[in-house]
Length: 281
Image 1 (tube, rainbow, N blue to C red):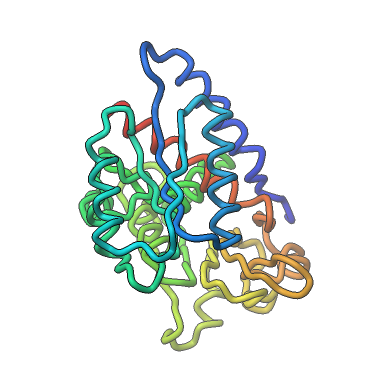
Image 2 (cartoon, rainbow, N blue to C red; image 1 turned 135 degrees about the vertical axis):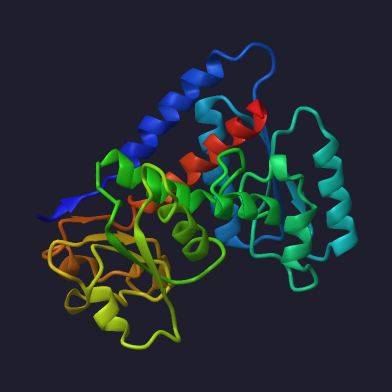
């Protein structure tokens, strides 16, 4: 009981494997372009962390810094330019975007083979259909990778995912119910309109919290011996916290991810992995 799922350690292992693969590549190395719009401190910090990861594994990267006054047409022109560049294998537009920009329009403008975030409708469709050749969302990929690494069985288990976002909840549900290793789970998506929410979370063999509600999941909502994965990040007066009340839930969970140091590092590792996949495709 009460064992930690160490995302930092698993992410470090993944980066080491990627570095070895990339160093063995003949010719040019994979290239990743970041588009950073405006001066949002959180966005700047996220891009800095992702760029550091690129440097560690040998991916060439550069950050295109744009004004938050940019028009949608101007941003689309920048994306078209990157789509055409032969030395760029991945394009990441850091979100959130300014209010004058329609996120869906931008996501769909990225070449699906360079869509390292995995948000393009073509890649989402491939994910749902169970194809393996697409680029898929990084956080769900990281969660599945963690479960596999720790040999946490998903086949036949009841997985309850709290949150139905296009970034985590929906794609993760699609991954976990596929007919393959690391899948074969019975998946329930719970959300703000779910009735008998606590009864549902109490029935989960694997409970995944991805709502962005600070310390929402408490011990009384968790089945003793369940695996608990915390995806949420909220800024509070006492610092960053997850969706799970960690100190009390860890006492009854068989496995639990900490926050920080759980899912977050895996998201960046999977971004780097997607960039290599785009390069090789």
